[in-house]
Length: 431
Image (cartoon, rainbow, N blue to C red):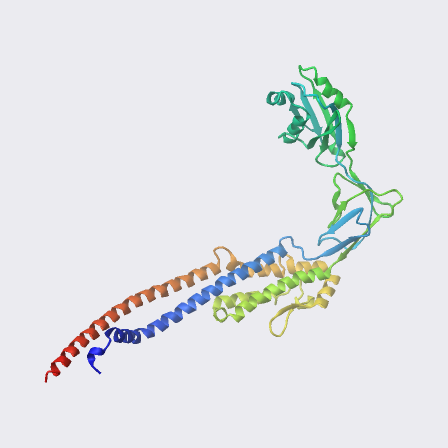
């Protein structure tokens, strides 16, 4: 083979590749390790934040217990219940429901408002007034519609809604208190000005018709020697602790009281716990099944710290005794029978064990909080990994530059060798 046929570029590339491959492999391995671990930590941060949010949702109101409430007469009242309600049977007789006060005043449909005077309204002891001269200045032909709008838009409005209803030659200004209850009755007054037509408003007030009386809700609690309860609202939140009663209509005197039954709901508690258990198991599996995390000290520390929280005593009791336990593979689960029995025996104790200030969920929050806070360990770890990755990238750039110089040197050498050998071949061919 003639030396002149040698490709200097090819030889330079091959020699350069042999020289650079060792360091290339080292840098590539470092880059893969740092980038993979960084990606895993970003995913772990998301999972930890989700777990922290879940734990906070449990401990925010310190409510884990769940109850159900039913009534035998939904048409009369509706019920909803919180975790602090006491199981039991209750009887409610709805004597009357709360109403908002509603009044109407009749006017001739062709009438306009007086040019001046003060139309005063009072609700629950608070008064405000509409100056009719302001309306007249804006619109000399102002009528009931403008008055109703002024009432509704008044910054001083103490709780009145106004509307206009028309029937033939008559128009009616209808006033309704925004809040129900006897204390929110509307009273009206008109202080006339110079315009004598103000007498028409005075007459309308005197002849005002009550469309709906302002009244409180009245209920009787108990079948015998009932307790009378009054409320300005039809939403009763403090009559039975933990139970909200929404009154819908009054009963007749011959009607039987409505039966309300409040019961503990262990299945709802179990569902809440299973939601947590699923989240915990998924988080631990994420660490154990990811080879980069499983071999990392901080990731293993997170897993170990969380696991240790389950090994403590809460309210002097182990978690396994109330149905929260690990199987032989380290998977957390809920034993329905144990949990149901523990809830039946001492529901308040279970709540304290899990969502109390010194309970399991508070302990877990404390164990992962250093990692999840904005300037926490997770951020520090990711910044360190990113810095390491950037350093490897910079090393790779410098290595590429160095190898480019090596390539050029080889190319120059092989090119010169090709030229020299070609000259020798040409000289030898002359003999």
